[in-house]
Every structure is written in C-alpha cells, then in structure tokens.
Length: 294
Figure 1: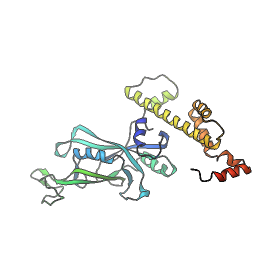
Figure 2 (figure 1 turned 30 degrees about the vertical axis):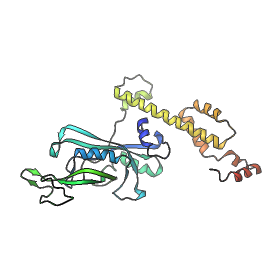
Figure 3 (figure 1 turned 90 degrees about the vertical axis):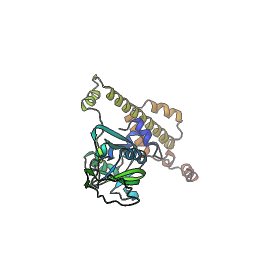
Figure 4 (figure 1 turned 135 degrees about the vertical axis):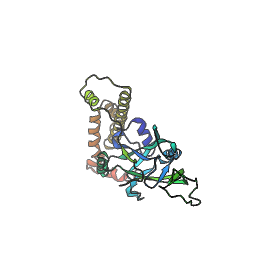
C-alpha cells in the first residue's frame, strides 16, 4: 500500500487526488552501468541525470508509442550504488531504480497479476544522449567514426560504447528481452508474515525501527483513505439528499468505521438524486430547470 509520502508524489501527476486503495505500486530497475548486450554502457553520471529525467515518464509495451499502450507512470527514481562490486571502467556498480504506479481497475487486473507473478518483468528504456564515446580512443561517435569495434579487445582494453550526457527520456517499456540484463520489475519490502499475524490477532509484539516506521506509514495511509471516504460520502449525500445539512452529515461520517463508509459510499453511488426518484410533476420540472447545471 502506498505511504502518504508516495501518494504525495503520485498526486503530482493526477488530475484529482488519488487514495492508497486506488493505486498499485511496483519498483523496477530501468538500467545500470554494466555493459549491455549491445556493447553499450551508461556511466554513473548518466544514470544520475536519467533519474531526474524519468520521473513522470510513462510505461508502454515494446516501445510502441500508442496512447492505448500506456500502462503506468514513474513517480520516483534514484541511483543506488554497490561499492563492493566494480564494473567496466573501474566504477562502483550502480543501478537506476524507479517506482511506478498504475490505477487499480478491471482493465489493469490481468497486468497487475502478471507483474506479481513475475511474468511481466523485463523492461527497456528509450532515451537520447548527447554523446556516444568509444571506450578505447574516446572518439565521439556522433561526430565521426573510429576503427574500434564494440566487443573487441585492443591492447588489453575492451571496446564498448559509453552513453554520455542524457538529454531526454522518452519512455520505458515492458519487453521480452531487454538490452540490459538486470533491467526489470523488482520485489519491494513487505511486512513479515509473523508480524502481520500478530497484529491481526491483537497480540503484543516488539517492532524493529524499520517495522515501526512502516507500520506508522500504513496507519497514515489508512487515515488518508478514511478521510477520502468521508469526503466522498459527504458529496454523495449532498447530491442525493440535498435537504440534509452538510454539518450533520460530517458529524455522522466522523463516527463511522472504514467498512461503514465504504458501504454507504457504494450504496449512494448507485442512486440518482432523490428528486429524480419522486416522480412528481414538481420534481420533473426541477430536473428540466437544472439540466445544464455543471
């Protein structure tokens, strides 16, 4: 479930405020600084620039830029380093990790299931860089060619294409075979099953600092979701039963549990305004007068 901090980042891109129950989150590795299958490599500096460029970018399928292919959107991205692991050029291993969201709806149910099951996993990025540099001689291959061939070794130096100074990030795609071997959807931290069981059964339990922090985030997300339900209930009652004072509805909603709020919101969303259901001449005339009110 999304934390309040994550929801704040997500809602920068939404036209209305989304709550935690409406969104599905997953993390993914977009790319790293290893040499890929095409004998190309992003340096760590390039990954840092891509991290900023990819926030807000949409996810599609197979780099096909059709609107109907849009599936998810990145709301956060950062570079993670592993100082114990070295890559070509002597850099510490670095990976560009992103967090994306999609809306929970019937259309996305199958995709969410495939992501959770590890079927839809591999991803690839589409971006533009200012320079493509030969690792052997330093030639900018955007300006001229050189005699060195990617994948070959010259006087003990391996040749690859260094991707330098990203200037744009177009999209990221679910693909069958990514150029970067490590790119793909990753698992994220979840509460331990033992902890969940203890909390559900009301037993005392000792939390680590990390668990306490996550539990607090879940509590805050629950409060945000509950407050959203109260706003929806107030709007629904105002629409269906305009005779009821808003302050009265607010006081009643404040005492309701989450399940009660959900039930009332669902029931009221299936009803039209009360005046439309009376069937009187007065109600009919009122409908005509208010037909174009927005």
